[in-house]
Length: 236
Image (cartoon, rainbow, N blue to C red; front, side, top):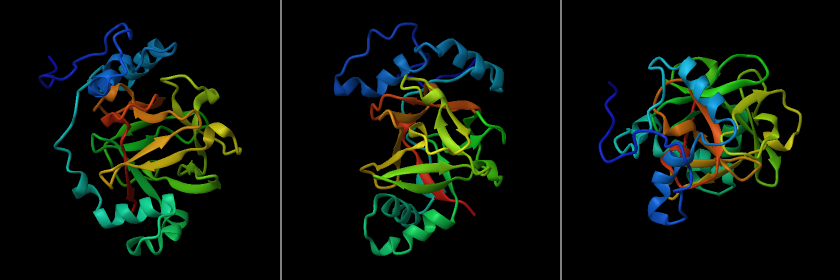
């Protein structure tokens, strides 16, 4: 029997109607509504068929992930400054960092966004970070503060079918200057994590707040939730 952290949500309820706009409920809100869109059943099957534990775990807040042991504050500041065009001494070579170097995108669970295969429409999951190229991404500015995020196959992260719905999968597909392939990066107040927003102004999100390997990456309304916060770590 899976042990769930106390005083934190243990599953995704069947109905989304309890969601309220109150600030105090924002963290709990994601656990109640992720996966409840039209594609929820397919997503649950996807998770169950690809998870070693046969499902997902929904937790509240992971407070002991060693964020700063994964990437130094200076390196992260350089990446964020380059992304946002902020002139800082530590980011003097930020532009070249983004254009010439690859980065891992780390989730709240300390895992890495990973491309499932080299094919078009291959979904993006979270998995334990390793040294393989399928966890390395490059950021290419396309104007108006937006970026294409390219995978190791030189394909682009894409919101599947250009959907604006919650729970729409993030996948890779051939870069074609499409709106659904353009993202914005927003530094968070803690200075070392970011939100990644889609063309629909939704946040890239770990589905269900899962900590498991193979949890899919989707878009969802931005609600200041831990599952929507990422680190950009220079890949070696």
